[in-house]
Length: 193
Image 1: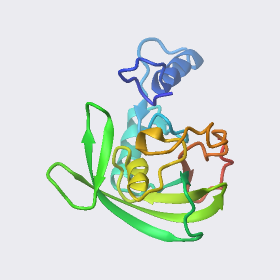
Image 2: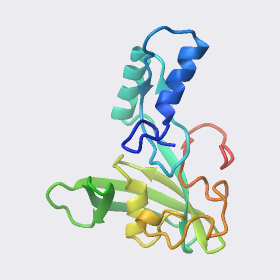
Image 3: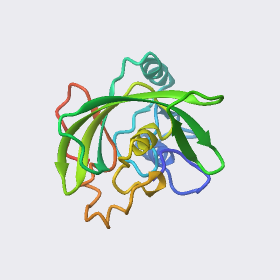
Image 4: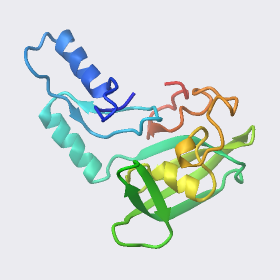
């Protein structure tokens, strides 16, 4: 499900939440709902909305000032050394027509700086579970940066995975639901949120 309406015209989360609020609170007219961040379509996790413009303003400021720490988990294809931690730096360019991002080790015109750090948590069935902390928030960043080093996210055919989740013998719950934000300071949630 897309976070917000896109060219596919598929039902989206933002309009569903607006309809829910309108019905639950019997609101006439349009319902305000602030979208504070998005997740890529094949990803699941926590989406944060604001019910008031004041809350949206305050929370957006926290995102802009990077006082919100985003932590993700993802299964990638291939075995990586357990407990390895590494910082990746790339320069990303996006082909808007094809909605795909490319990573380069060198800066070039129009490219955006992207940085993330990952730690290998475990290995299982030829795949590795990573904890990922992006320092920047670029489009498709985690997906393209991991693919660029030869470890695409399990089932992410768009960025180089060799097979879909089903062909890997994994259910979405087993795949950490592709990428899942984890709130710092809160107990870990099971992968199937």
